[in-house]
Image 1: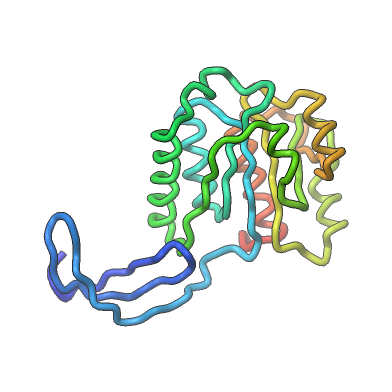
Image 2: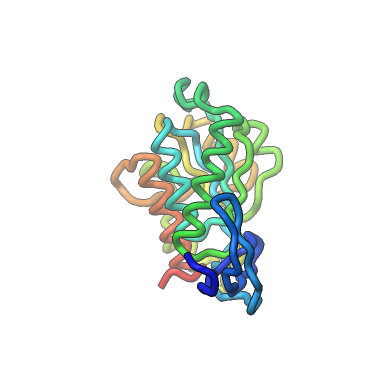
Length: 213
C-alpha cells in the first residue's frame, strides 16, 4: 500500500479506526487516525464456548469458525474421554496458535473484538465456577432447544455452551453438570462430531438470542 491509502484498524476491545497510511517499512506502518467508531458487528449475546479438547486441526477449526460466528470466549476442557493425543498437544505454543487463529478470523470477518481463549482446564475444576446460564449438549438425550427458547422467551444476554470431546461425555459428567445448574439439551437424533456439534450449537443460539438472522 502507498501513502494516502485508507486503512481500517481495530483494537480488539470494540473500537474501529479509519486511518490514512502515512508511511513505514516492512516491520511497521505509520497511520493517521481519521475517525474512531463503534460499528454494530458484535453479537448482543455473549457466548462462552466450553469445548472438549480435540486433536490438532479439529480444535483449530472450532476456534476459527466460532470466532466468525461471534463467540466471546473459548474455554478448552479436559474431560474423562478427552483423547490423550489431544492433551499432549496442549502447551504454550498451542495456546498461542489458537489465539493467533482467533485474531486472523476476527480480522477476516470484520469483528472488533477478539475472543478470549483461556488455558485448558479440567472438567472438575471448570464445574466449580462456570458461567450461567449454561447448556450442555448431549447425544440424543436432553431437552430440545425449542423448549428452552420458550422458557427463555424474554431473551438472554449471556450463555455458556458445553460441548463434549471426540469421545463424548461420560454419564457422570452430565449428571455433575446438571447438579451444578447446567441444562442438558440435544441437537437431534444424529450423533455429531465434536467440531460439528460446536458450530451447530453456536449457530442455533445465535439465531435464537443473538444476531444471526
